[in-house]
Length: 389
Image (cartoon, rainbow, N blue to C red; front, side, top):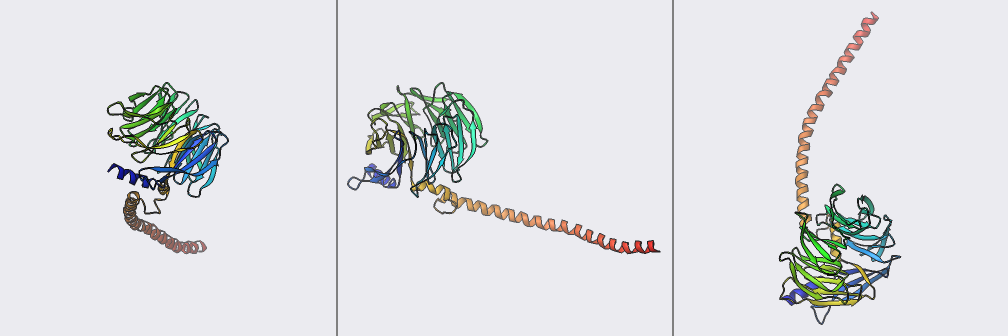
């Protein structure tokens, strides 16, 4: 049963593309190709290579049909993944673009920089809609809440700010007593993890307090949520650790890379992608919350570059911006027209009622005016006659 599920999953990821940014100024793309001999495994085939920055690539994210990279050269490069071409350049920051995130349903890109600012950019028009000023030092980590209404940022000023993106102002500020390496929000938005020097704090969204602290005895580099109650942590050590947030302990660890684990991301439910800047490798693992199942590596590739950041893109992401015209996503498209039709009927009924009443009101003044005009016409000749006489 497990192997069949893995085979189905590998076929589902055949259109997925893993993008990595490197110290050597390259942005690399790798397609996931299932192997014919062993269907449970896959191979990572290079799909594109572009040298678009004049310094190390520091951040990378994907949204809609675009991939955006930010570098130490203070610019953001936009790539159109459908046309396989460079789409444009953003130069709204005056420092290294250290982190960025996208929210697909609202089509916004949020970027953080060493110039202490956070910029909210609308994807498509690529206009900076708002610049947020509150940090007194460079931004080091950022994450968006699944709802898109909250953002979490941390900087070199050792503060974490929760932003209300609806009103574009800080909701509250937390002193985290350290420079955050990353911020990650759980899929359901009930928890968020902050990696500080040699530890990772898991915060509860309800209490805004620390729920569980992971001491990994090395600098943490990355964290992903396997599910809402389980996390995988990687840092400046060869091992990756799985922690249960319910039992509040480490349940498993395995050696992922030679020296460090630089970045991680999830492909679906059971596939974990890790990358390292020490051995230049990208690896895909089958990871389960079930302790009886072993962690198995299903693919690996040597990039020959030191990896700094990673993202994943697939053609299904671009449907989010076109769901009004296309009948692919049934959830949003089927429900919204029904609501619109009902509202239209209600408004038209109201308009009919209003027009009837308005016509009646308008008709009476017109009649009065007409009568007045007639009277005035009758009076004028009389007065003229009297004056003449």
